[in-house]
Image 1 (cartoon, rainbow, N blue to C red):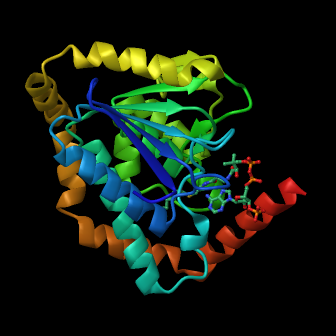
Image 2: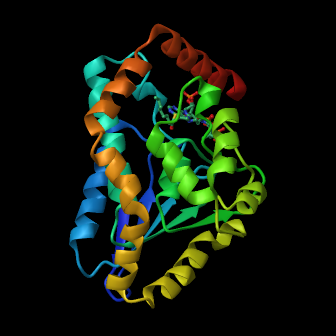
Length: 260
Ligand code: CO8
């Protein structure tokens, strides 16, 4: 695997830990997404690997979501490739046969929140400085239908309707309350708790759990699988609009100003 992702697989437990280490904020760039997909595919093919914990090596951030620079000032051809990679990541994680647990040890906006929602269980660091949610509208962009479906499947329709329109980012306590995460623990216990939780899930026979997971998720997955090309076209048409590019530019400026 690449240096931006570190995978440690423990043969004795059948559990792999995937650490995202793409400084500064684990933004999901085309290159990073491609590496994540390759790493995931390898694990998926290894029948001795039954569980996967996804976490971040970066301080304070799980993932800043999609890399905005892959959507800003880029050619339509680049946007096509980028969006295909985003789709691929979601399809692979959401459809994984493995038990997947997100150890959310930092902020997790937009695509970062999506990545954590593809997992079977989410444990978040109980630090009020961190936030999680689909904040797309705050950037002047619209979460695609499969982001929306994943959130509905996680927290329900009404909560999603409000969260998406307002682009809400939730504190850990709020995220727990609406069920966006399943458990909060002190920051230094996120990974150990994920490992303990994994042990419980590993006690269930794989075939029964996998068929159940597939039964729950297949309709949502099929919706994208049968509409991938149209979804790519929609994305490229939308993201290359002057007005949308302008919004993204302003948002990037805001990120820089906030820092100064
Ligand atoms: N993409 C690219 N660069 C980013 C991103 C990002 N998503 N996030 C942060 N950066 C950059 C910052 O601009 C900054 O750059 P520089 O050092 O050059 O000034 C650097 O990373 C570090 O960022 P911060 O100083 O802000 O780091 P903090 O530790 O203070 O904060 C946060 C970390 C909380 C993650 C913060 O950076 C943040 O809020 N980032 C923005 C997150 C965001 O809004 N992401 C949305 C991405 S869009 C998406 O994922 C789904 C899009 C769906 C598309 C639908 C279209 C149809």
